[in-house]
Length: 158
Length: 127
Image 1 (cartoon, rainbow over the protein chains, first blue to last red):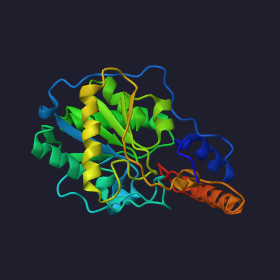
Image 2 (cartoon, chains in turn orange, brown):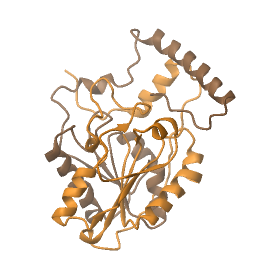
Image 3 (cartoon, each protein chain N blue to C red):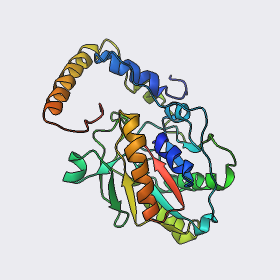
Image 4 (cartoon, rainbow over the protein chains, first blue to last red):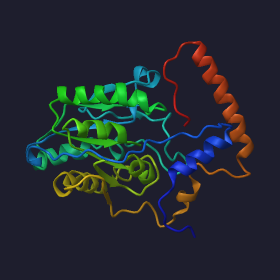
């Protein structure tokens, strides 16, 4: 009987890469201080934006590891997740709402829990290079969310 | 994704991350984190369980109101299964797959070298 414990993903990944012959361990980002701000509006007035690590299930999305934006409606029937590290032997990603909360946020909007859902969500590629994330992807995601006039953002890595 | 959250927050846009890799997210340090203790792949809830998915997003949204300081982590109340063997199974390395992994690494490095020659800017992560 396996005990309940939080899976140590960093150690597992280090061991997995080493077994594949990689000699330099990946260095995960680590910071001493974390920024923080509160929403400027009531949640019932906030427009919500979504960011995912899944790519659009289109030729462009499958072949171009870059930032993509997709309309939230109609909810995409599938997303391209094959290149991401998720637990492929025990689950699946056939239900988009299990990793991008589109249907749920539409319900919340109708119930008045949030003001609105931004008309599009954004895909950001997972990157080896923290520098690429910090210097290119993060500012670009911020610019797109501002363009969408988003007040709060939900980020969902697979 | 942690770095993206930090950048948005530093620029005045409040964020919450919903995820299942608690060690990576807390190592990075993020303003608000809702931890779904599930296998990687379905942080918003079990596939097709709309009631659970709605409950999880409600908890995530509530964090914008309830968290008053940074590095806030909350857990969902859900469990994936009574059988916890999935915890041991992720990226397991043992004698049953050691040889196969070594070969996969070799193949991967060959492909990366070819992609570099072809001028591809961004390689895929190792799945």
